[in-house]
Each structure stands twice: as structure tokens, then as C-alpha cells.
Length: 329
Image 1 (cartoon, rainbow, N blue to C red):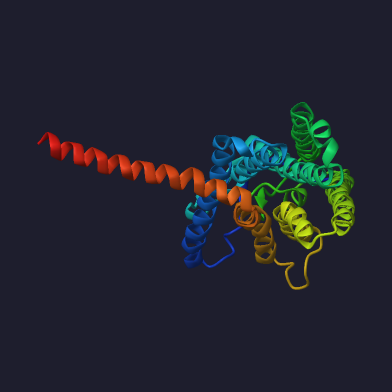
Image 2: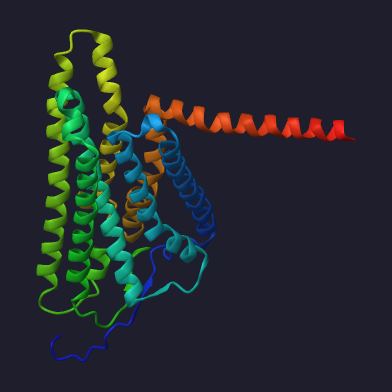
């Protein structure tokens, strides 16, 4: 290989869905478009409800609002390009655009994991140290935790992207995926450092995700212990209900994320890898606002109060306006 002359790559071709039957691509486009629009609508609805309802201006819901922002940005970095490629014959992406997509997807993806960890800590403080909650989760402290989450996500995105794109890409430029992800890009890299970079990136990402997951598990170990000490069944149920939506999202998030690293037998084909990637790029963001809206009673009631009252007011205004016009006539 060292004796061959290679030409540097200036663009990549995303051929992720090209191996699927062509008649399925419009079906995929419609399905993923509807899921993406629902994801955007659900997260925007959560953000608008928290913003307009003053009773939700607490650390828990402000963290949820920030989580929705990171989810919207994460899906925006991947899905619009994927939808365009499903209906296009030109699936090329420039070197710079590919690097940018990797940076933003990793930045918002890791920010999402860090925010889930902070939300676990918030529930731990609320249940295990309720008297110190206003001190430990003060507005300034909450803002610092959110800022560190975004900073940590940006560092991870920059670290992974710079490590991958500092490698030379030679010869073939066909990426066997629907977005610029690390494993398919590493197969196109050349040089003596490819294996070391691949192992390093995989190790760092796995350790950070595992660290976040273990911190969440530790938080819930203390939470469960504290809940079991509550004498009344009603008190235990009320305490656990404040954690139910977050815990469900954590289980879904890490269950699908773990599939990336522990692939099932029989899914090592390109189509299998694409379907696995769909779970954590499309399905997980789709489920998240549903879980928070349905499992969080206070948020659900606030949504009904805020938006149903506005709809009722608009209908009433329309009727009054129509009645006034008839009187004038």
C-alpha cells in the first residue's frame, strides 16, 4: 500500500439507503418526515409550555427545556440531509460539510447525555436533600450545570471530529451510511494511525457514555433508597412519579445507544447497520417528547391549560366578532 499513489478526497458520497429497494425510499421519506415533524412539534410544544407557564419555571423543567433544545438541534444536524438524500440521486457531501455534520451530531448528542445526567442529579437532590434543594439547585447553579453540559458536548464533538478528519482520506469516497459517522469514515481513511484513532475515539466515547450512565444509576440508587424510607404509599408514589419520565427516557436513550456498540447477530450487513442507526437518530428523539408529555402529569396539565385555553379564547373571540358584525349590519 505504501508504494501506491493516492488522490486526496474532497467530497464524500453517502450511499446509506442506496442498497434498499428503490420503491421503499418514498415510503421511508414519508415515514421519517412525519416522525421528524412530530419530534420538532413535540419539543417546541414542551419549550413553549415551560416558557409560558410560570409554575414550571423550576430547575427540573428548565433542564427539560434545555434537553428539548439539544434534541431539536441534534435531529436538525442529521435528518434534513437524510430526507433530501432519500429522494435525490446526487448524494455527495463536501469534506467541510461532512466534518461539520459530525461535529454537530456529536456535540448535541453528548450534550443530551450530559443533560440527562444533570437531570438525574436534580431528582437526587429534590428527593434525598429537599431542604437544601434551593441552595444546591439555585438558578446560578443550574445555569452552571447547563453551561458545563454544553461545553462538555462541544469538547467531545471537537475532539472526535478533529481526530477523524486529521487522518488522510484516500481513494474511495463512498460512505456506507446516511450521515457522516465515525465507523464508515474510518474505513475510508489511510495511514498508519487509523487503527489507533479508531480505538481511541471508541474508547473515549464509550467511557464518557458509560460514566454518565453510571452517575445516573448512582443517583437512582440513592433515590430508591430514600423513597423506600417514606412511610406512606401515597408519598412513595408521588416521589417516584417525579422521576418516572426522566427514568423512562434514560432507559430508552441508553438501550438504543448500546446497540451501536453491541450489535446483534445477523445485523452486520449494511442494511442492518442503517436500521440500527435509525433507532438512535430518528426513533429515540421521536419517543422522548411523547414520554415526557404523557408520563409527567404536571407538564401534561400545563399543556392542556395553556393551549386549550388559547384555543377556547380564539373560538370565543371569533363568535363575538361574528355576532358584532351581525349587529352592525
